Length: 128
Image (cartoon, helix red, strand yellow):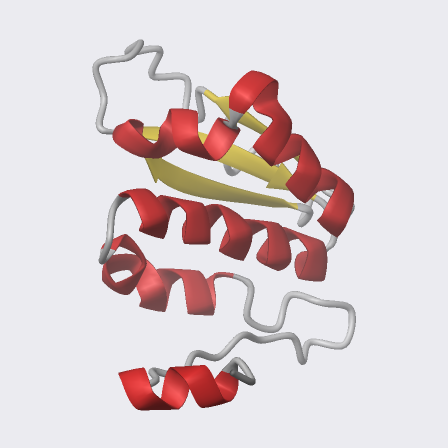
């Protein structure tokens, strides 16, 4: 799959660290399938760019297909799973993720924002 040639505006490619791929996939792919169902997306790991370098790489590419909202929801759930396995990963790629699909909906107004909570604010935000 070539990221540029194959993208009709309905694909997000996400780099998943090799050590989190199994966790993200889940037993028999169940974790990815549950996210697909929840967000009406299609997801699979692929060799994006045609490098074909096998398993000797630090990341696997996860292709997420669907509308912009579904892709972002699925992407954030996958990133949450990666963050569980590799704390601090999301913080390193936050700007890339937040800016990736900005304005890419039909109205040109789509966007995602982030907010950092202190420990004592988090329980309030979660309603606990």
